[in-house]
Image 1 (cartoon, rainbow, N blue to C red):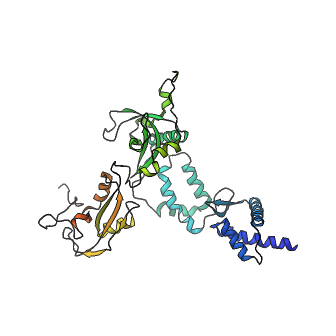
Image 2 (cartoon, one colour; image 1 turned 90 degrees about the vertical axis):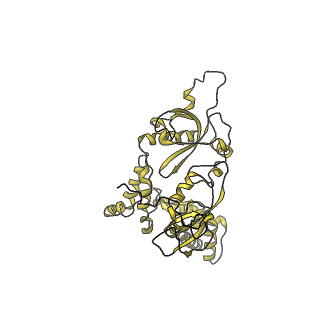
Image 3 (cartoon, rainbow, N blue to C red; image 1 turned 180 degrees about the vertical axis):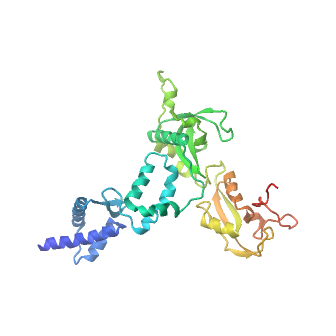
Length: 367
């Protein structure tokens, strides 16, 4: 082997080692390689080596991918062999995707994932090792039909229409809704559509929410099909999603929103005390990304909660919209969370007597 060929072989061996490790950017690859070599080489030389490596990998049924600026080697099928730790994440992935299995392609994707990376005797482990108990999205045929129809309109940039009975009507009093669909949001297992009513000014305050399961028969029609466009003044039923979302400030609209409820007053600072299990839970499962603890946990005797001598109490701060959805979340902590105005020792009336704020679980039972 000639000396230039030996040098090239040395470079390519080191480059392959770096790519197999994964996680390196192009500049990091160049720096690592030149630190390894006796004499640094030019960028053009390294680029030529990478091109040859790509060709060699393709012959072996592999590819060198650059994802988000970092290199890694994968199988040509597009899926890398899972490490043992990655395989342990498959039950989580299956639980997350299973509620969406009614959507075309999801079931096939799950099947391909397990067939390729999971051996037969591991299937029972996958089925029972992890169970999700939080509300799961339920996509029956009607919701699926509406979901896919709305997504189709969003991707095509076309206005749509449907018959809708709001959440207070229990499937009665259907009204025709005409809008530009811009976003589908999930909250506590329910899907909501946010859209701009047709003919309204393109501004955030005109965005409206609709529960997708309240759409009659899940039927979504193109608004252009609703009207006869044989007139000279033809209405434009299409929209540019990027331009419309910018005008509606979609990226900012839900900043500080818990669930789907948006207030005209915007975000404000809210502080509450949390105690015992509620403090542990809210720190493990934050209500919002703005959440932060502003006092250190302190053991305090809480007179409004019986059965404990002392509980750890801390003040938690949020910067969010003050909505009924937020109150619902706070209410789930019952007497173990209260407004900051009561003070860290718990809620009391004007005479200093402890008071209960929420329904105590398990006490209101029929005889």
